[in-house]
Image (cartoon, rainbow, N blue to C red; front, top):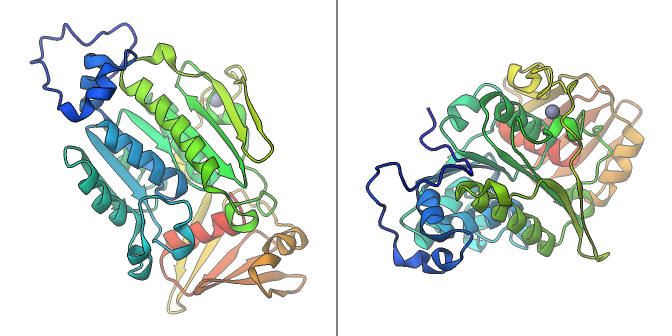
Length: 360
Ligand SMILES: [Zn+2]
């Protein structure tokens, strides 16, 4: 059972609960009339799950921990690298040298920022098998992931269990965010019916990203989170917000209407929760390798993939496969969408590399 549910009608003041003492460190937030004492009391009791602790996640985690959420669970499968430091604001050079898992480094840093918040850094790969264990009992899920498999899984979980979540993504100088309020707004699959085709979407690894767009999208998500947690659903932006900070384009557009034929919120087929969609990974016995396979069987345009991976350095390519070297790993992608990641036995790392360099 979730400890706290929020609604605009419930003002939270007549529950007979002992009034919560609000630490003075939150005085500026209490003074802000949109939050006030009641809103802050709700924030202090809230439980937020943050999926991903890279660029967006470090900014959100910092903002939400400083705002005083009760429990902040940070789920991330990756470790800190030097190239993260340009935008992943919770980490430092020592974390990169020590190859510290991001969830661990974030927990350690945030515990010095706000010791009143219960921060749980979990080094896990969110997937259909563990999603209940990792997300049950939370009031809000914030997306800071880097791939659509995880986002569609969060979306399935959210709609099925009636827990709001906030989508966010950015690449280059461009970013996009919108909230999903189950049974009220369109869900992710109403907006994007299917995952983008593998091998064609740009990613931060192939076209780069500047830190200000990360801060913009993460801040936008954190603001919506504060509204939801403070019980001010009436203030939640129910539109898609997009920003291109280099091209100076800032706009919001209407979310599509809830689609009665939507597989997720309309027909309630939770294919990502059931594990019938998305990528799967299995370690290859004795080979220091992991095979990643897409369950949808989508094929990959290897020529297009080559064009995207060429900036990484020399590729091995023929009509059957493309091989790139990424850090200490080799990524070999086959036309049938399968990939073998050599240099690791960690399925989470292999899926992460696949998501970043191949897609979805
Ligand atoms: Zn839907």
